[in-house]
Length: 164
Ligand SMILES: [Ca+2]
Ligand SMILES: [Ca+2]
Image: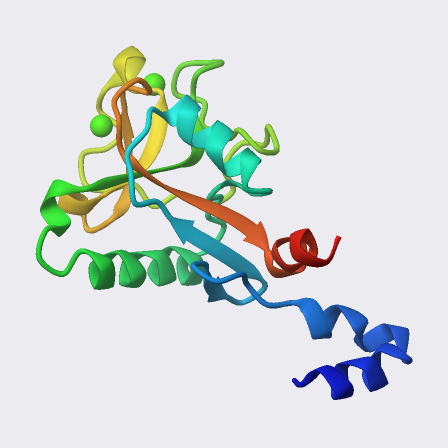
């Protein structure tokens, strides 16, 4: 949508969010969300803080469609080294062992798609990642190891950080 059309539509407040609901450069778009795939590796806590600094959160996965989108993006990025990479997402059982919650909301997971044999680290694995060897399905690992990570925000929030 070009700027003049946007201004015209902005006179109808109901269209305003659509003018700005797109993801910033470097972020992938899926439905109403934007996703950033990190280039460097961090502990889960560092990754969480970095996403916050970018006006986002670690990724929260709530459907097969969303999980499949991320799997497809990760195989695209890691055509040649998928079996060597893992990406932190927002899930954790740091509070109560084996009760997995999204850190962003504190809610228990309504959707799970564990890789075969996961979770398997018990008290030694309290942070969730997408595990290349497991087809980029969910796995637990030691929160202190350094992995890639995925930040997520809604497209309205993502665009809003430019204009706001
Ligand atoms: Ca655990
Ligand atoms: Ca594990």
